[in-house]
Length: 498
Image (cartoon, rainbow, N blue to C red; front, side):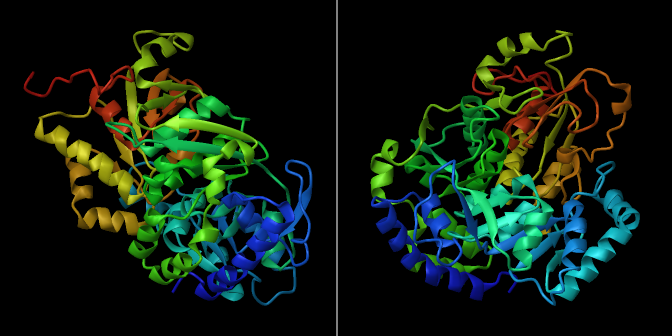
């Protein structure tokens, strides 16, 4: 059992009493974020109130997660602490150092050789101090955490900004520096400025080509890259409950792009199903017993303006697909507005709309659900005699995702479409894309399901205009070859001219 069930049981045993104390201290109903924060305060600190955005508080997180690029210094520092084991369950994930070039068959063996010294060090230190170590090819840190470690009501810190992904399973998961991770691993309190609260009410249900990714793309346009600073974003409403756990994780993941401390969702049936589907029925059963304390109080959802510092409402019934970009993840445009949006960045009108590559993956959108969604669209395209207009690259989020996709025929379908299957790793999302011809610095446009799109981010080319979209829209961009294409109204011509 990879997850530490004893730790989870201890956390769940503490939560109801701590929530009762917090409700008494504050004299009002509580948001989910407040319940988790008060449940993880160091002993004695729960007997006071904290001013949002002003006071500092000390916490004991349940878990620590580290990716290989940042884990090196953190673990070197930990080895000097004189400890025989880490004080809290911790894990290391080797996902950041793998260069995406030709595909998994060649890229993964090359990475294992080029970074052998790093991997050997991380594996040996992890074995010595009781840390789980996920070797190269196992998957992207945040997808692996979601599948194996995240649990509703927990608090986790991680040495990567997209640690916040675990909010999709109702955690408060926060990205920190290596020194903060070491503090937690040696058992010291972890300090955080008590955050403000932003409530996002989701009504209705996603329709047509809209996906969970489009929710956070639209919200990024509303909040901007600074709108969530020093705040926790908490999603609620019927629309939130209609989303899958991996869809929730996609939304929580990109909370980092609006500057949020983290994002979270109340515990619901979709989280329970995901826990059971990933071999954690014991966690789901334990969460069910204290379910009322793993979600916001009913009064909060009924009158959110009373309990959040800001409330944003998004109607999923009317939401349509978005492309966010280029150069900033908060430049949000509905697909219907793309032609107009390009005028601000269009230095070569004849080439800017043309898609040169489409990419699916990253910790934001590499779950089985994401690959299944993309494969379903590709299956329909192949049946209609359609071919891609540009290369399609796919990074599965984990070996579990890749294996399941292969078992169900998705990988074969992708290959039939001409897609390249990359390593289960971050790859192009973090700039580890050794893209042929990028050194020429030619103007071009790419569409990807990642989270960031700053200049040079993916391929090192300052003239690559990158647009963030859902996996579904990435496939559609590959099929049409034009980001102005609107799948709700426009048509494609197949290989027979039909």
